[in-house]
Amino acid sequence: MKKFIQESAILGLIAIPFLYLIYQWEILPQQLPIHFDLKGSPNNWVDKQGFVIFLALLSVGLYILLLAIPKIDPKKSLHLMGAKYDSIRLIIHLFISAFACFLIYAGTNEKENYSSIYFILLGIYYLVLGNYFQTLKPNYFIGIRTPWTIDNDEVWKKTHFVSGRIWVIGGLILVLSSFVLTTELLARVFLVVTIFLAFMPIIYSYFKSKELGAH
Image 1 (cartoon, rainbow, N blue to C red):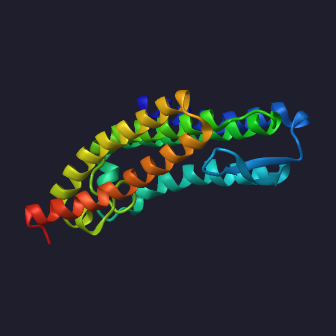
Image 2: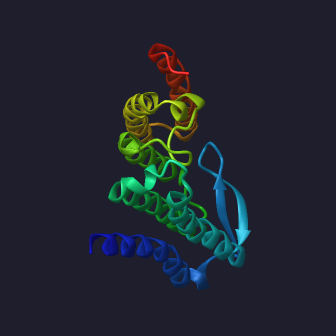
């Protein structure tokens, strides 16, 4: 029953942007944003029909991919995670749904500045995803996949434990900065935080592997 409720919730999240798109269709401009620069300003657009295809590929395509990954995972560890993996899927689809709705809203209110909302969404994503890092079992598809984490389960575990906390802190910094910094400063904070979150786990896993004598 719990599995059914969770799957229904994911499908509901996928449906929300489509329903919002239908509701706003008549007042939508011909072009909708699908990408933003480092300052949170839109820099790539598609027409309304193209946006429907973009949304379908993004949400429905991701849903199918995340369902398939545990079945093709050689380690079978994602399948063994059970409800925890489903929770991660739910979080990913929640973010995608919120981001898609944000794109639609931004398209109908072009004159407003959305940099704060954009970076708040990204900060929340970092924060929540980081909170789930230590629940991930070693696999080839999701998580911090370096030669050293893939090769050694202990390196994987310690890397995700430390990195998860760093991602949570990075997400908090980004969210809080969105309320107090100018767009230009916020863009710099985002860049620094994102680069650090991307490279720190790689460096940490290398040195942890050396420390543990893993090969």
